[in-house]
Amino acid sequence: MTTYKICKAFTNLEPKHQIGLIVGFAFVLRLLVAWQTPYPSRDAYMYLSLAEFYHTDNLAQIADTHPWMPPLYPLVLSGLIKLSLSTENAALIVSMVGSLIILLSAYSITHTLTKKHHLALLALFFVAIHRDMIEGASAIEREALYYPLISLSLVFLIKTFQEQLKPLFISLSFFLGGIAYTCRQEALQLVLILPIILIILYFTDKKHSKKLTLISPALILIFFIPSLILSQFVNESAGSKWDPLNKQRTQLLLDNLRGK
Image 1 (cartoon, rainbow, N blue to C red):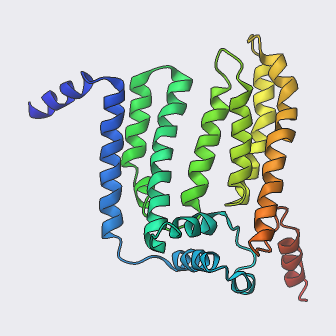
Image 2 (image 1 turned 90 degrees about the vertical axis):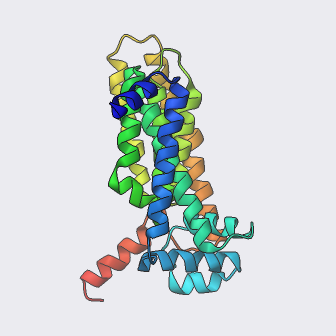
Image 3 (image 1 turned 60 degrees about the vertical axis):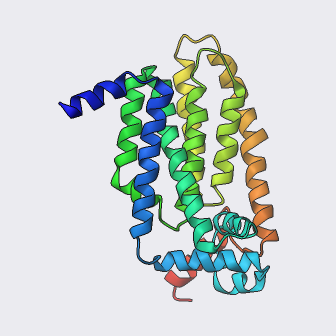
């Protein structure tokens, strides 16, 4: 009976209060898991050391130890360290905030596609209690920054399907995809979604389909490519030898296979 009353009281709340309760529950759950996590992983120590190197401008050490590591995640951590935070706390903040962004992105995407609040609320709840999402909120890894950026990118990408044409959304989508590329190269796969979108829009009856089909390639040139150029500039200025096109690493792998 008590459970029924709680569920009924929850359904009588306003949508924003329902979202707030689930997000608050998810946040507390993630804090408890982070508090019980005993020690960082081996990769976590690597990211923490890189953040310390960036904080002390020890670029030579980075070039010697981890020259191929994409620099965005440790750079963000080093920026938070300048706010008098410890490296571990900075990483925890990034992971927690990123986890909440993924939560709200799940709600936004579902609501945009279905136009139904209760379905979006279910998606929000399932992401809130998902084991991998909970553990990821306390993990010190570059995915803590990569997944939120990709989630936001998908949010803006899907909002392009709204009734009114809003080029800003698809522009932000590919811009965030380019920034996410400095965390993991898999972000480049986001560009492959564009032809699928163009095909879908071309065969729909939406008035803005042809217009969007024409301007989408231009938006990629305007927003995605400059973000990649900016990423490479950040890499070089930070002392990283990471190559967005991965040509040097591919050559090293080929040399190893050939026994050189």
